Image 1 (spheres, rainbow, N blue to C red):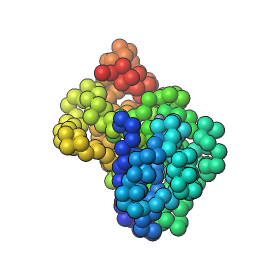
Image 2: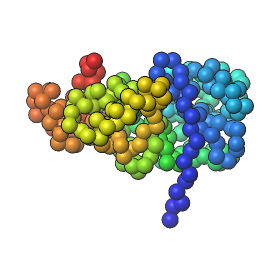
Image 3: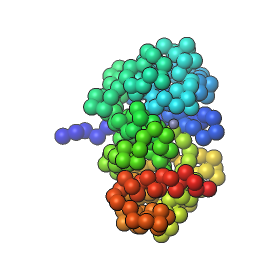
Length: 264
Ligand SMILES: [Zn+2]
């Protein structure tokens, strides 16, 4: 019998125009922090100085500069382990982690399963544990990342992997895109009551300049069209948009992603 883990204490640090760097309080060592995707060092340093905390480890989901750019400077201040995907585009010295193994930080009381989620980039990974998933730019709330390196079959499979996580999983993604994503979601599926309600909630949070995140996997499975490519309503909307019959969820995904790329 598994014992439910208590929720992590996670804070959002903003970077650039709409990135979030997630700071996880290490459960076993108060005052020690794990940073996820520190694209910029300065806001992390400022937050740690403000709270008197120190950095204990860095987790990376993928190689894009807005997710790894702050690593060298953070390592000058705190020479800590960096765990991330196997990818030569990430500076040497990081500990590569792969699906099937766990990212274990026992001193800190943290342990994550690694999910290989190619599509946005080919080596993209997600960290899942303690009732939370750090999904980088693969899964956004009500949307998904652009498909820079993978194909629709790969990215649809990656999102299918994520949607099987327990519904109460908190979803910490890399960008604040939720409001724009919901406009698209409600264009695809205008009668979606869950998405309508969520849009009002997100508008209220954003009006107060609060993050819309974390989301919950159960909610994402209701509102996120990219997680519902096998849903008849979403599939029919994609087929109407494409003007042809579509064969299967991966093709529906490909049409939705291309549609969203053009959507304003
Ligand atoms: Zn990215």
